[in-house]
Length: 233
Ligand code: CA
Image 1 (cartoon, helix red, strand yellow):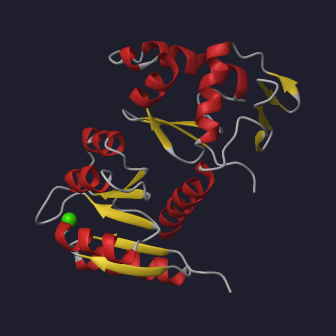
Image 2: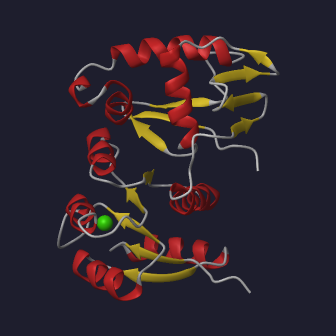
């Protein structure tokens, strides 16, 4: 029998906490819960959960401060659960080390998909190499040949365009912020303007998407960054 993944739900609103716990338990996860930041710290150190779902608006401490503190000593995946629609909070949370975010209200399938992706990424991150391929539908990213194809046809991406697609596909399913992508590709001094990234993305979409206005492979998270579709199972 498989060992069940244990998820800590940190949420002070009883109805939301109850909904999340029901969904996760129904999907076969072990679920434990905390209702404030102090309880969350205790549960994380004593129960070693496989993932934390973290509400940003906690009664005793801001959720972003929890992320900052937890990241001092563990890389366990954290998904921020937020009622706030302000993009700044999501970006802060991601830049402080959260793995993903989900905005209330959300559906059960949406929640389970995010949880699966976050847990899988932690498992894979130790063994990711530069070899192999990413395949989703008609799209293939060949890391060895440095080539992207659609229906077997070479898309003729430039060096920079390939690096962007390569980075997004390695983190497929996760949102990457503009700043993160800029820093990964152009170095730490590249903060400030995302113009170069937007221009590159427009060209990438023209080359890989059937209809660039309705992308199937790389999605825009408005004001935050980009998210690539998950690979075929
Ligand atoms: Ca709350």
